[in-house]
Image (cartoon, rainbow, N blue to C red):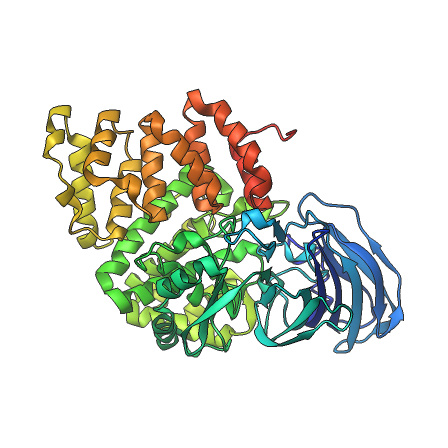
Length: 611
């Protein structure tokens, strides 16, 4: 039995130290032809069988130290894929290394890879490929020990058509003509810092880059590149702030890649190359806190990693905590408190969606036979943050608690940890405050579903204006609507506008007269900030403003960030009259969507899959 419920690989018997990848990207067939050399160290004596994770891979051959060996693929599990058992021609003793070379090909439907046609890109001329391996999809791209408990370095050589550019979650190490094919180029990469398989990432497309700092560039198609350079111009300031808080940045380069719109997440913290959704390009840098989040992962997640996905809150709760500390350094404590209030609301939304008794709302859920994609929500982020903030208040404030976080990062750097490891160190670090720590309801926080046992009292200075304005709208009679003016918003930041709309979404739907008036005075229709637009369209649909339904479906399909796409589809689906239309719009756009997003929308809408 694997020590990680999401992996078949034999992590207690042996561990991968290094991967050497040779990838040939075939856009015609939508496959990667690959050869991977895994340097594996035995953790026990008489090691004779090695187990790797695979999913929908065609295994061509396996050799160890150059000689062909027997291998077999197990039956296919619904989300874990198939285990690849490799029989070694000799027994290994503990501490010995072997190089296992697997030649293979990915499937066109590999869950880690999205192949975009030229029409699905911004430039419309060249195809595009991007990977998304978190949580357990690397095995559909590379046969590996696909568990965050194993960390390794990697080198890669990637052959692509010469008109395209390849980038990876590693430092770029030059390029040369492909000796096998003069119409192709081989790009080389090296990642010398050991990291888990879910952080291996590749993008191939018509990419350009701009320098935005001494160790940072933005990459994207040329249509987005100048916009991205402007939007993320504060990257170096954020990096320096994070270093002051958490210790030196060990990854060398910190680049940002803006993906095509179908990328399913806000950002993904791939080392040396953060992936970002184009929905962050608001034009006013107001959504760059997502970059502060991904930068923070360079310490919490990438340097200190959750041992299994059951401990995902160690990655995300600490990263939200660090991200908000960066916000505090740059914009003040009121801003951090304001962001925490919004996070608490996001947590309430997740708990309501799952149901307050659903064990997936535990901070530390059990994932035996649970697909980690289906467990994904804001719970590990915001329940995790709320616990750390609660501890900060009990133990002496942000400076004192940040001292612990920094010490925890330095102690566990380059390794993978469990909640027990974290908690034991917390008690060691605060050994003079054990009486305080013993009063914490650990079971309530960690292993009980629903909202946390303690609601932190956040400072509402920046939230009050949002609360007051939302209450005015909720309480307004029809004859009062003429009192609302465009000037109501003039002192509110875009962060506050997001909160104002969020508050309204937490109440009963507004009468249609009210949202019509709101559009007349505030003109939210013309707002380009995706976070504002997303909430505004949901509010309108909820008030049964029929004209807005096509706009909501357009936003659900012209970008694929799950945070927006899933609730927009669900919102319109809740408007009975448009139920059939929602399903037909989804079916029409399904092939352009990321496979993980499409799979979850199918569950949300309970759609018959036979399209």
